[in-house]
Length: 254
Image (tube, rainbow, N blue to C red):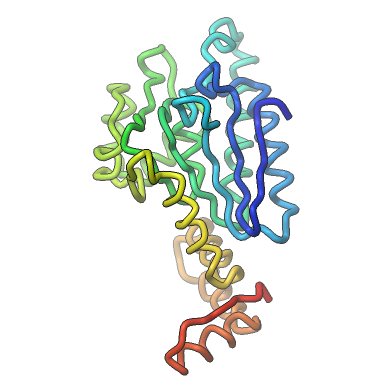
């Protein structure tokens, strides 16, 4: 893959967007390779958390879709492009393990839509976020409008989309768009630490909690997912240590 890099350290897998010369703008090739990367992650049994970020050479997480590629698209080509983006981001969203978007710079248009498909979003203080598609005569096409509305409410989402304005990371945090904002110097260290905190907990518990939050608005499946965890070694270990007033040293993923 040329536009995507995959790195793994222990149980954390990092997906890096790698078009620094184009500020990681999402073109068709990158979306195809991102989909391939997500397919690889689906099969990684030793992964407990994933991080999506932009290549360190650039100043962007992903500064939108590649407008130079989109400019002359026909209706059918635009439809196929949007479908590719939607399917790719849905695959990412449906990964069993939590995914953190590490926004290390601009996250605009399709770039922000990618971050919205992740479970957690953190950013450096210099990051700028927005969905400026309406300023280009189009609209978010990769599922971002619906995800943004669900995350920060209709009124806030409508303002960002209708005006096309970009907001600084601290403002995005106030809106509920980000989980944390850190200084550039400590950004990556803090992101990895967050991933490690996720990895330290019972993997089946984390995965089933994600399923419950993503796939149900009632309590029927949540009840089932909850009960299933009582068949696991991790449940017995975690509660045994709690009763002993000790911190669980290790979860087995069993």
